[in-house]
Length: 295
Image 1 (cartoon, rainbow, N blue to C red):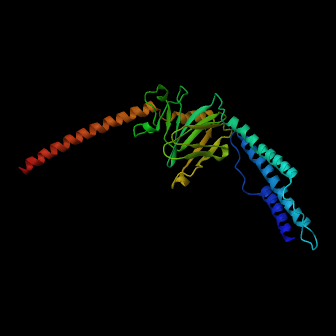
Image 2: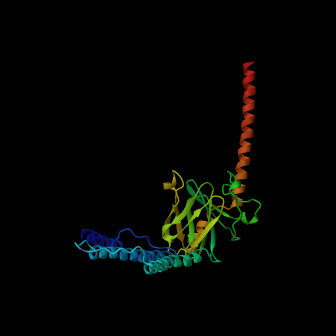
C-alpha cells in the first residue's frame, strides 16, 4: 500500500521538478535550435516511458496486493507480450535516434560561404588562426611548431602567408555569418564548447575535426573545455565575441599576419645577434684591459 503511494509521489514530484526546475539551459545564440528540439523530444519520450512504467507498477501494487486465499498464476513466458514489448522498444529507440541523425546530417554539411576559423587547443588555453584576403587557410602541422612558428604553419604554402594569427584566448566572429570551426590539439584531448551556440566537438591530437554554426546574437560568450584534459582543465576558458561586420573588421585589422610575424621575428633575431656580438667585443676588450692591469 505505502509502496504504491511512494511511487505515485515520485511520479508527481518528477513532473513538477521538470516543469518548475530552476536549472535550464542558456538562451540560444546560434542557428542550432534543433539541438534543443531533439533534447526536448528525448525528455518527452524518456519521461513518458518513465511515467507509464511507474504507473503500471503502482497499478500492480494495488491490484495484486496480498490477500488471504488468493492464488498466484505462474506464467513462465508470454510470446505475444514479448513481441509487443520488442516492437514498442524498437519504435521508441527509432524515435529517439532519427531526429538526432537528421540534425547531425545538417551539422556536418558546412555552407560554402562560411568563414574558416582554426582553433588550436593546448594545455591549458586556446589560440586562433583566420584566413587573410585570399580566404584560404594555409596548411599546418604540429611538427613545425616552435618559437618562430607557434602555429606550425607551412612556410612553403603561399596560402598561409596572409593568415591572421590570434595569440589570445579572445575570438571575434561576425554576426549572421556561418563559421566553420577547425579544431587542432597539440597535446591531449580537448573540447571547444560555447553553451549558447549549442555546438561542440573534440579536438583530437593528430587530426583535424570540425563543425559549424551561425551566430545570430551580438554579445560575449564564454568558451569552455568540455573534455577533462589535466590539472588545469578548470581554468581552460576563453571568450567569443559576436560583432557586427564593422566592429569585426576593426578587430581583424589589429592583428598581424603570418608573413609580418616572420618578418618581425627575423628583425628581432638580427637585433639580438648584433647585441650579442657587441657584448662579446666589449667583454673581450675588458678581459684584455684586465690582463694588462694585472701585468
